[in-house]
Length: 351
Image (spheres, rainbow, N blue to C red):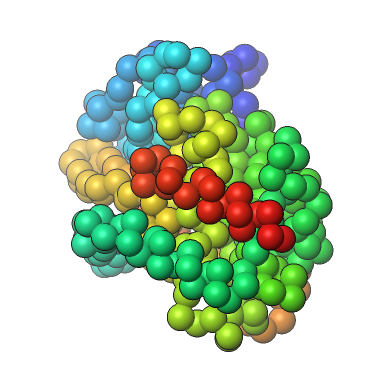
């Protein structure tokens, strides 16, 4: 019988079961639930499980690894948050079965990529606002416009090219068409719904999309996708950074500065995320008897190839066929993006 506080998804086409908690639990209950997911994943023929949710108090990654006592690495990421006036911890634990883990040289490459993104953030911090204003100025000169499918409707709805969004999401991330279409309409796999932000060129064509999911612990930036066919006239500008910066400003204004915005970034978009106000968390590899890797996500999903024809993918390749993508974990710094709320509303009003 499934615990009433656990929402568990069936193993998907990528071999993952992604589960979350519907209410805060103790660290002990959380870790017992991880053991349940391990047994379920093996029994269901999966190769990766993950659990996210709120816990009462912090959890030491080393203690978590020793309690679970696996002989290959678990992933642990966490950040403090405030929910309904309570100070809690958003905890994210995951594990791949051994043959899905990347070899050591790949792990070292990912570590260097995350460290590079953190160095970029440190270099950018003193001039963050100067560079943000310059990006927004160039975006305005290029005539770019912000659009949004906002479930509440304040920031618009129906402005996103749904058919193109579905093609992009199914092609690059192998999301099935029904889920992609539901996500475009404000709902999908996250219980609190989804914001879908887009950046249009002056002709009204969608150039870039950014999806933000709402969870019990806060918000998760999920997908950032660029339609590269539309970028030729504006290669001097990070359209993804502009879109995420404006979207982040709106979300912080609505949900408040205490709302946790926490998600993943790969090597392709880590720097763009930094320019939009995200700060990568420090990765730590502790390869003891019970290994634990902090603030990193191993072999989560494949990416579709970046071709000029964006059609729907028909089959998800297995991780033995193509390398699956690895990610670093980061959180949004609300104070960096809050000043751009009026800019975001202006880019919306001109759409």
